Length: 218
Image (cartoon, rainbow, N blue to C red; front, side, top):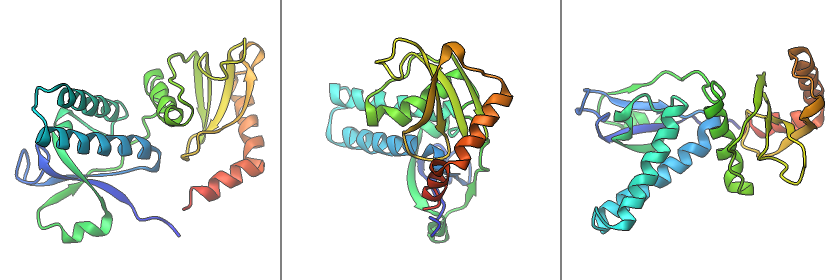
């Protein structure tokens, strides 16, 4: 069974209906952005609570304000938020069918190109978000990376910390499972596209690729 499409609907602030535009912004949520959106919604809710129940200049409210805008910056980095006004908007998580009950004009934003691996900074962000809460790893170094189909090859000093040499790891990028498929020592690794494609072909013939493909259907 395929899950319905999720969206963020602007219900208050700059990008809601009748504010900067007559239309409310509606942003489709891609599966690969789920972790960041979860963190954003928590931060938004905690900021709302802090704003209502605490003095705005209290240490707690200032902390929640800082956390909220830190997540917003991450969403702008991957091009989910287009501009600063999206950060100044109150958002509600909805299904597509919920839009039929929305009594104001709205405009669904086009799905964005995948920007997760456009730059080294955005790739580091994706790795940290994926692994951070699960294995408490914050990625600070990224020597090299390449993407082939739905697979990311990357070398970092912050992975396999018990190793004395830098490791090149291979990970599936189209799911929510923080698990590396395999890895090699960087010193003798062949970064050529021909070799990477061969490794991808091996992985996708393996049960692991089939398992993740089936997993992401639900």
